[in-house]
Length: 603
Image 1 (spheres, rainbow, N blue to C red):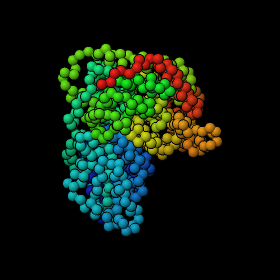
Image 2: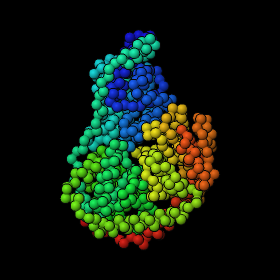
Image 3: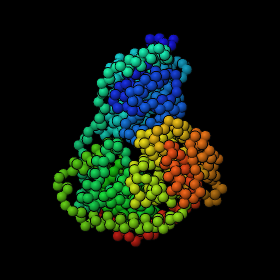
């Protein structure tokens, strides 16, 4: 029945829906193969001449994570288009990360019409329910098929989907939206009709629709913090939109100039390396375990201003959980509970810029108090002492902590970096050089999985023009289909692979037993894979190099950064590195133990 009016009606309805999204700012669509989704595929191709960037992927999970990287980099959702059935189930991991990571994402899935549901028809599943628990909103096309909907209804569906993906109301952050779209057969329009449709589209005067705006700030919760008394700022991973970043940094600088409070900046906060900010980066080592109440005394301060979700440091989290001072949490548009420690007294979801702007005018006159300066000096001196220790112990050595420190120095300023879970993000938090240049830092710590690591990095590079991924071997292998983006990628991506023969993070957990034969650690936890990552990349046409030692890193990076997509493999010993980390923590604890002067008085 190719070429029948109903098949062309399907394409026209898909064009209305996607065209409304395009006019409202949609820039990227990621298409997966399928027959039921044919009208959406053809419509997306028809919109390419008008500026829509169309990417194709055979793996729905990889496609969704590529779109997630696009959304993280641009602040706007990309569309993923799939056929019906199990294809929809493969979108769930990315939807989960979009939910917890506050990343806008649009998932458009083709489906059978209602008459074919629940009666044993092929590829007819309850896909409309697959993603709901992780989506901001689930919208549905007409049960009779998308072609049964009026253009105004299709445009309204598109407008709501985009608005919900960007955060539909105050305190509701960006996230995934699922549109389940039934299509009645016949699905495939004829060539002559599609040619005519393309000509109509080219001649049509399209009036732009306004891009849905994020909700404005609600009334900011009162400051509740006194800049004339000591305190600290704990800055977790940045999860605001790219457009909000300059105001966030300016507000933080303003607060610190007035209060003098040190900023304990997570590796994913994006703050490290920025000028005019007093930052503490070695806090995880300053708070090293094994020194009793002396470590906790560092955070026994009357006040804490927490920005966004918690940093990865378990030591910092434990200290925050036990300190008695007032804690206020400011998030960037996310009104959900972000306090697993249950110690925050007030949470403002309007963002730091709005929080600072809402403080009374009487807040700002005055100089930094002596007690505030004393606390900041204590943190700064401890941080400098630990940094000196790291310089001495890691200079010229191999291993993952030294690699993190060297990479932070050698990577050019402003090149975005994506840190994979689990060891890379923790090493970057503890061992990087505080004097390293600033750069945008990204991680998918919302759900902290390893799904889609490489595909996410490719999407980020596509959105931002270039990026560097630092990943472990299992995380990279888990998303090996991500190498397929090589042929389409326009941004440059350098992948630095830490090849430590399995799950290195498990070496840092109390899993190994004495005697070791009681638990087969390698088989049950580390799970090393006998596969050459360079050979796997080469099969996909991606060049790579294996480094012979630390001295080769600088030259290898220069080579890799000049390639469209390249892989650098650094071999390490995960067991030896785990022992090194523990030794550095013990040394740092001994170094700072005598510097704590006891807790400041709490209110």
